[in-house]
Image (cartoon, rainbow, N blue to C red; front, side, top):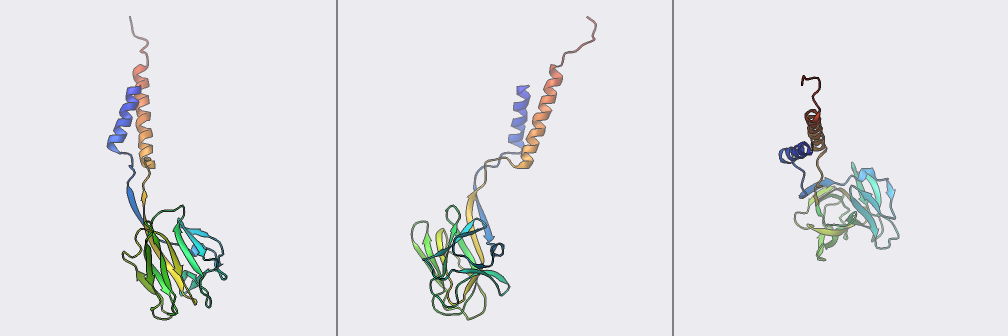
Length: 203
């Protein structure tokens, strides 16, 4: 019986395989529409990332619906209502692109540190007033650890696209588990049939 079970497992492993841990790149746009509208004075999480008001702010950043987007918006009058973007639980990520609606006033920027402690910055203060624009960052924010989204004077960040690497789990896929169960079950049935004594034959 045990030989049959072992054979079934061998067939499963050789024929279907177990998903091995290997780096997988995930790219996603943070679903800010899942967050409640209005100011947030403490950290909120979305799609595996954490948005934290930074700098001991007197006026908190807020989630708004604006220009057809769900966005993080700074106050229309105060300095320093920044939002720190990190992976929940820590880890490196890449900031791929954002849509920014800006007043064109000095101060709009994104900056922070990478996993090696190096400073990384991108100045957004020279953008055209009032028109939402998609900014592709290329390699500027690769392997970032934390980034400060600095939106002043009513500017806002939307469609925040990020990417990061994660390990796939070393656990069989559900379909493979089902196949393993079928294989083991057939092995048990065969083993019982072979072990069943034959009765009724003449001696």
